[in-house]
Image (cartoon, rainbow, N blue to C red; front, top):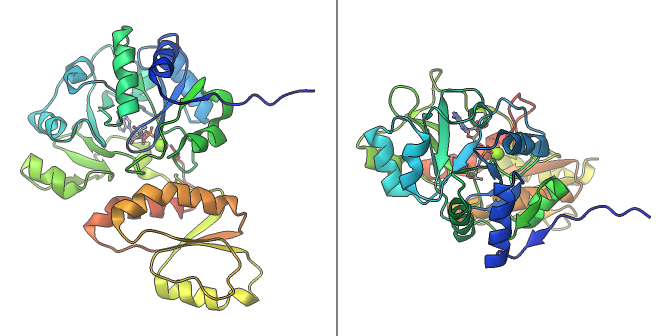
Length: 339
Ligand code: TXA
Ligand code: MG
């Protein structure tokens, strides 16, 4: 009889952290929680380890990955130039859900940067991520390359179970830190072109960043470096997913009885109709709560085996920018970029 290998999921006590850091030093892959989403980590100084990350995710090799650092003081080891604005953002928001794209130091591997002249760096705030990075540094490691720990194109993972579902034993071990607090990926700001530019909205809003910079943040334009996560349809459930305003959702539900399709709903203000027999999730009304639960909700609706997932649209206000961005990607058709 053959056994399907089971992913190793560990409670992140000091022994597990020590084992995980040792695995990273040895070229292994460790999935770990951050405050945004789970990452699939490998030694950023080991090209073979980074290539294994791409293989585990099924991600094209030319996509850059973020280097996670134990301490903001390590920034100068990875960037050859740290503009004053970038240093100010690092001081204001690290550890936290912010990634800075900076001109790369000479030693940074091409497999990490996707062959570009810039590198993405972030100091995460999650205590398990911090403990892992600190222990990795104590063992002589310098930075952990980690994309989100999902299969390429799928919804990002916010629990250890999501990682196990997507990656199985492709990660040597998974540190289980519970559900990620923020729930969507970090804000990405590029300083690689002229002046800071928002490449991906995320856990920290553009107004907060503009206040620290002293001027409004620019949205990405044609001069932005290629940031696959910002251009693509990804974060997508396997089930066809549509974003619909509340009134349209009402109308679709009214016709539901006569439709052949099995419908699953991620609602916010719309109440579950009497007699509705599909999967229904009433999402939190507040933006932080909505973001925290979003990926778990999409995965749960996907698991209901509906023909279509209907997502009630969210307010078109700046506060909801990052959530709207993820919903737009989850509900868009095929694209070439799915980190
Ligand atoms: O919250 C997060 O950022 C999570 C956690 C694990 O830290 N990580 C994450 O990584 O979302 P990933 O690889 O799924 O998305 C990172 C995005 C990608 O779209 C990648 O193209 C972009 O960052 N990126 C990384 N390095 C870059 C660079 N040098 N230039 C432009 N874009 C870069
Ligand atoms: Mg990703």
